[in-house]
Image 1 (cartoon, rainbow, N blue to C red):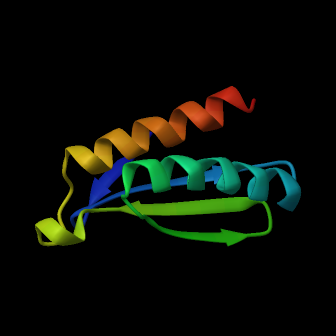
Image 2 (cartoon, rainbow, N blue to C red):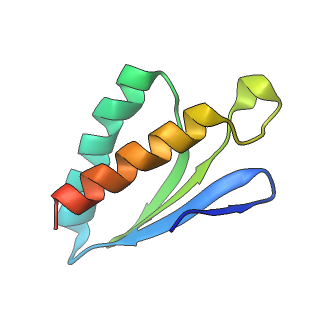
Length: 80
């Protein structure tokens, strides 16, 4: 579940290994480019962390962030 705090939507995803995490990130990058909405994200081995907010709206959570979060969840679920 995405957690909204400090004007950000946050969530962490865990994978079997780095290869799965990187594959997930690659797939998410396609959606990010299509939406032209780029998240702050980090990857450490098998974990990918996201922080979503809309910079052009004053660094707050908007519908763009919620749509991207839903797309990220869909990609994650599809990969299970």
